[in-house]
Length: 356
Ligand code: NAD
Image (cartoon, rainbow, N blue to C red; front, side, top):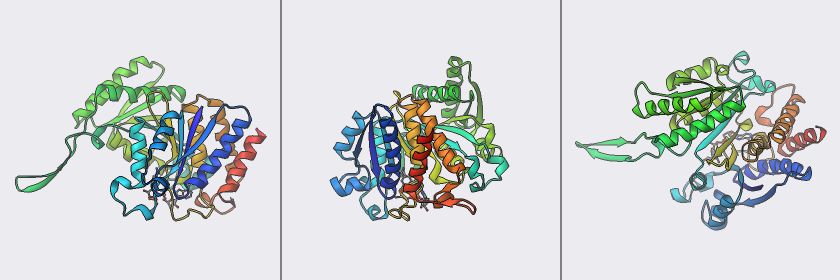
């Protein structure tokens, strides 16, 4: 199993280093993995003049999975758009056809006070949002701004083909089968024909998954239900734009950006795994960034790309145990807990893995 490590910019190298230590631990235990580092984002612009250089493209294509830190930094903000670090991220997603974005939203009981919602609403929260990532209004054509009848008009095209809907529906049904067997598909079929087709295809696909209970919800109601009673959801599947908005809303239910991993998968479960946060330039180099979202991203990689469910669960338990012991990085610190830095958080997770 070949893993490409793309640490990126800002806190990226600090947090990926901790996930790398966790992967090394399993390598020593006998897991057959090979790690190779590459450049993506601002560091690649500095070294090679491009945010997604050819050498990284080759590495990404050869690898079975990719672990990414984060890209971006204020020093790159004035570069032409195609040279900016974030273009590297868009380019690698497109190159690898990563159409399925999986974002688990889990609130560890120890962090219930970090949420802006009342603890009883979010304690025990465990949702998986499955967002289609390469279609919809973000890519649809025609698009643009032009003059019509003497004034400017802006327009985009919301478009999904049956096959695009079907392939993301399969990902979501399979995920629901592995979890609690409930899938909620979110659309706006009362107004948008495109999402009527979405609902029809998801309903048709459900026949292949009799063990999963499918429900449908309109996106405006889903936005409301996510803050009213988020624990009613198990797996949520939706299109690119609705998923963009709902997954950010859902991630903030946990209140801790440094804790949440994500996966972006192609149709063969090759994936790019990354924390949901950015490169945090404000704290880069200080040794205080939370590495847990990246370590949990490595766990997702082992689960989804390599089918190593047991190893993934061991990592998640080690993270949970570390939180139970009261260790916190600054972003999740509260009175009565023990504040530690990035490397020490890595140490604690490793110790708990060794004790298992
Ligand atoms: P950000 O997520 O980097 O930071 C937001 C806030 O959260 C900051 O105060 C930061 O210190 C804190 N934070 C983030 N991750 C943390 C962690 N692991 N531990 C502790 N605190 C953490 O968002 P931003 O400030 O809007 O963006 C900074 C840069 O990151 C920009 O260049 C942006 O384009 C880029 N970005 C990249 C990605 C990505 O690589 N996938 C995603 C979002 C933003």
